[in-house]
Image 1: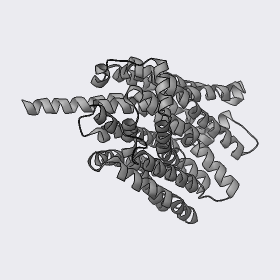
Image 2: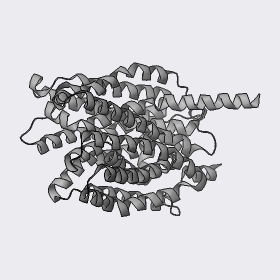
Image 3: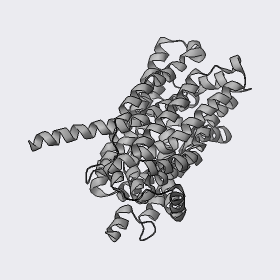
Image 4: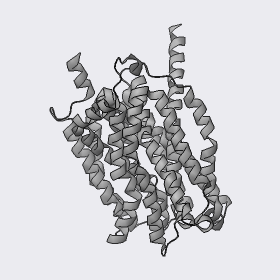
Length: 436
């Protein structure tokens, strides 16, 4: 009988993880599509005097969505901490879907003029506002429903779900590249994956509506007001700052090896679209493997050792790896380098996300987590494609994105040292043990 109950509980836990991470899938699916089809989007909505200027405008629009994340983190994060995780996750999905639909169906510049790029910008801002709390809401939900001793493993599925979106998007892109000509993709074919994203929205709503509120949230006697949440964030500014630096390593690495990879492969290394898509698919698969593995390992050995090792390795190896790749650009070399960077990212992030849920005070867990994540993405990670394109242009060094990744590794290393130093920033577990 006990075995049957255990099996049922396991199935129920898996189903809950799938339901809560479904919105992550939609978010990253659309974000990746925007990065991969950047060259086509730039021609459709941002015609300019040069391909470089057009692409920069596109990546600026891509990055603008991230500027809305801190606002979404504060406003929606406070809302989630007040009314509950379940209702908050349904709201974020609604806003995110609205932005996706807008981008998928707005006519091009030649049809409606300046209104076209403005509507695309509005769609990105809506997505950014929603994404500001989506990752935090999902991570907090997973941490609060995790079984004892397995928080790292459970929370890692927040990021792992995004890798599924990357692989699906890469497969769709591969199919389009084999079935349509380049002019067809540029004229209308690039919209097909966005439309598919819109079509799955009703299904995502259906499965998210069945979520239950976490027992940890229901057990809380006091629900802080918005002013109390803001005051708590103000008091714990050091935790938010260190959390932001922890996330810089994650978000810069992620957007470099996923969203920017197709553009890097095609525009910089001059490889084929098919080569870039295959590499991107393999990166998503590699991330999907390493995230839960290292999340589970962090449950056994602790968060600090993993964060230290892999932020340090990123600092030391990101630029040399890319320098070697641009010196000998080929499909096998690109695959090898990107899988190495994927290993660094997946290993670090598997421990980082759960660590962030542990250092943020419980009463503002969603708002605090989301704000730290949103600031890192808005100020650093979200502009990785833009920074990479700009660095290559101004330095003439095709490996320059490795400098940006090395900087991100340094941020993660410094933040880890500060967070886990004696008395600087105490983990939630330490805080709770003192009040028990």
